[in-house]
Length: 255
Ligand SMILES: [Zn+2]
Image: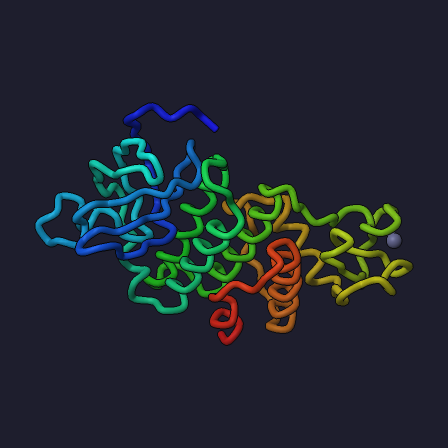
């Protein structure tokens, strides 16, 4: 954890907010260099506040913070990038909240993950483009799966997709098994320990998501049963590591 000065500046995205007192708000911020920071924005709910409108979810903001005893205090905020189109798409906005919730649940305070910050911002932009109808629904869906896969990587939970998670033999292009508990894909010999089956089509996409950047991700065409399989496999893994359900999952599954 970098030593906080008494006053420090950072770029930030709001993960979560909670109204507090008459006009204040307690915010959970995600920052590139300080990780998750809990801070109070005093008077922000008054329309006359200089902070008002600059500390909304899905808005990239430059903030000035003062270190407080329990919570840091936001003294200045200036929005730099607003993803306003997101608000017009319920599915897209739920996806954005879902990413926010994953970060909030998985990360401890003051644990910096600059790559995850960039990934989060990138995913929000794709979803925003999707809501503005300049990006397809499937690309948005893939951006969410890429986010999940990279989040697992970033947290040290990278699923084994090259060698069998059971016996370590190289995996082959065929139907395999999958176990979140054992740490990834299982070869046919070990598949009796699998929690679910993994089709070749889904296996290939998982490998792509683990190794390719968003920019290089090909324009895939996916059957809906493969999509369901991929969602299920990644959620099984996240759920195993998180050890409880996330509120927004049920909505996204009801797509
Ligand atoms: Zn095996």
